Image: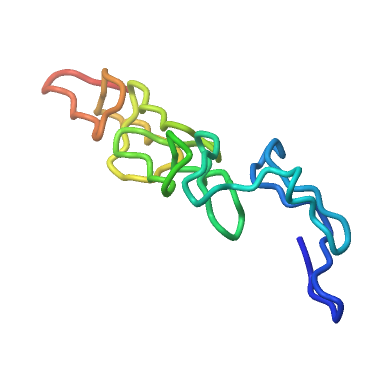
Length: 136
């Protein structure tokens, strides 16, 4: 982003506050155009859902397995029974029937083992088949 010289800071690129570049400050050499750029008011200024604010990076996407529904605070781990496959998710996806997830912060759900089943979405654990019944 910038490096320090005997004359002061030299900016190598614009300061981007959002991953899509919609909120930025134009910089060239020693100068940044603060009056015409977007400057966040503070750490809770809106980032997009799926992103969170940091002083070092501005708005940055949540890692896979985490989410941010409102762009404030910290990225939260996906709860049990759900997963977050991609970076920048605003909400986690419930596990599909036939899968489950007993852990937080997962990037995928676990398929039910042979002899186990789950008929609902968002399951924590698969259930064992009743005696005399089978699931492949």
